[in-house]
Length: 441
Ligand code: PLP
Image (cartoon, rainbow, N blue to C red; front, side, top):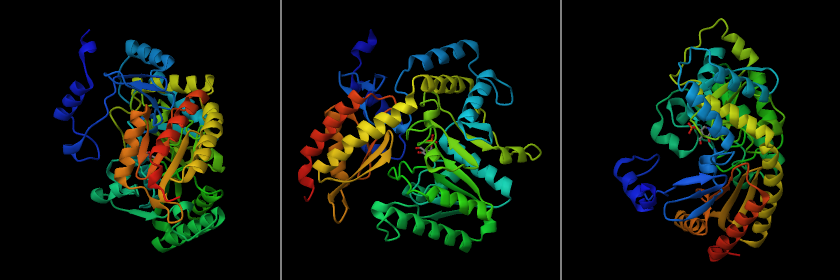
């Protein structure tokens, strides 16, 4: 009964009194209050509802409170809530087997972590141990997580106040809309980005490079789908110089782009795959590294110096097993492809024809972005204050959006129906219309 009396203000005040938030100045926060959620809809204590076009931090791929996953977690709770990583545990084995089965042929084992950052942390460590080399190459337009090496491997500005790890080198990855290479076509962008990466490796000394760490589709950086041939080119460079290729699928993996892994669409096979988020839709924190046979066998007779108290936590593992089984049976990945590339992408493309504010539409599946500009020729980003106002208007109209810099990342749960997508598109249309005067048409 007491829940009846709770208001958004109560919860917000409690939060502001005691909770210290990520990536922010604590003094000026006004967090959104959420009381509950089901499927693709969330609600607060004051009677507002939101249709989710964020999947939170692009992780709730199967929507909220999936009954099958809740049932599996409840069963695991009753059976065994926690057990150390050195034990053999049924849920852990079942989760690892399912993940290996989804990976390309030749992958053999999974090392479980608590989330995405420590997945990358441990993948980099494996690559360094395996090659006996030190340097990690990663892209400026990237996010790899907030731990020692992962934040320094990250390319975006969150790296700069945290640069304590050594041995990291950054390069420019392709982004045709704002090309670093003066390219005007996908082909030029691809060739020039690969030539740049080759020169970087040559100049740093190929024998000093342990790994190239790359998001298959850089997510937080702007949903930058690589041009055709780029990932294959990176794979070829890694092979030529004996470098381990780590593909970060933390955000793009587990259905987001309309395939189980995003790199499948580029026709490459990495050496290590890192994952988290969508593997169990974030119901319990979990991540990990999927290890190819050659690297996993290396550690048959070489000591792996790494571990975590909660590596393969049974509750997280039960959520993985049930999430992956539900995704297969309910054809969630197929839905991300058909509704994402069909209804959602088609709708966003027609919004771009109507609203001069939209400078670029890009993405795959349920992983789409709108880049908002005030001038399509100069590609001037919409200012932060205007983006905040757009975000406010979308929330007011019942959409939970994902805003990053001057972009709207349109990233609903992979389970979203065509009808819900259409409902959301109509709201995006109306709100962009309200802000039409920002754009020079
Ligand atoms: N890698 C990518 C591509 C991500 O998008 C993220 C988080 O957004 C991470 C790694 C870090 O994951 P986590 O926040 O679970 O540590």
